[in-house]
Length: 432
Image 1 (cartoon, rainbow, N blue to C red):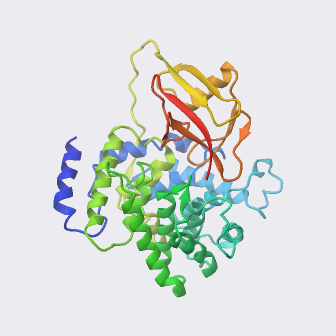
Image 2 (cartoon, helix red, strand yellow):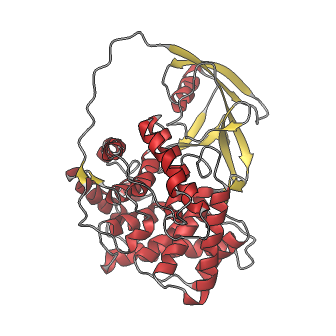
Image 3 (tube, rainbow, N blue to C red):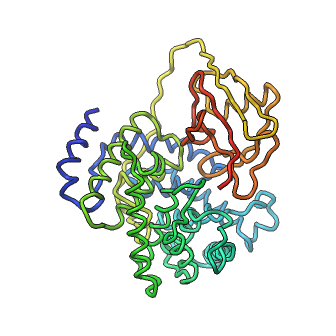
């Protein structure tokens, strides 16, 4: 609470004096504790668990994983380069049947830049060519009249442009124009509402293009789009201080830190967000590797745009594994969580007994074991997400939403959310 009091004091002192997003220094021990949560993730070197964002987050932070970090980058290179179309391994290696997605490939390119590497040579050319093909496919899906939608999302579209930009690869005006139009006409949507994450990623892509002096014919539109995104993100700030929610706030801060805007509101808003994040850190909110990797750069006053010219020689503190104390032997407490599915012709509702501290994924597994409930998940960089419930797969522009009954959307995925005793969780099929 002492840290929170100090930052609250700074709100009044600094907030009114600055129109830029400045984040005061954070206790290095707090940063180290956050970084320590990534160390176990760096031991997971299977294709399913490799996450380039983990590497990027550490390289842009004030802490490092030492040998683990180097091994992780090596594993990323082996996996992403050998599984691209045209690779000598890709035709014969059965493990390479699933090619890297657009988002994963973009993050891998960010990881290379975080190590001060450019995508060069035959391998590098394949990486860049594949990402450009992804963007061209998305461009065609959106259509010349902007009536369509990307196969993935505008978040991944913006991430792809950002990845090419930091590698100093020019992106055609037509491709940039699609993202500009989306921002100008309020298309950065996710799940039928304004997405702070998507808008922030688009803004970071534009900030990179502007800083690199790319697409000069669209420079005025790019400048206006950055301002538009900033204003919308500021309007999305909650009374608690978050931009959208706690997990979208780090990416929003990255954008707000890239360039100043008019008025003192920006400085105050960023300090409020920092106070809220510190409170959430003390409550243990950040456990997901992807979310941690987006927050660490902010705490080190860095953003993804800094990958244009990363400082690979900056000193970083060595992370040591967190020390654990053996808990006292206690009788496990069993809690009851009600799981319900009401959006199907044959509704499901059942109280599921699980151990206290279980994740929502544990609840789903237990419900399946008890019978009468089925589900399927798919791996992603932010953890497993539902793709099918009770035999009903989410169709195009549909998703299985997680809610705390009756209508409170969960901010965490099934692997991270831990229901409380007596809570009712609904899985709802919705369209967007």
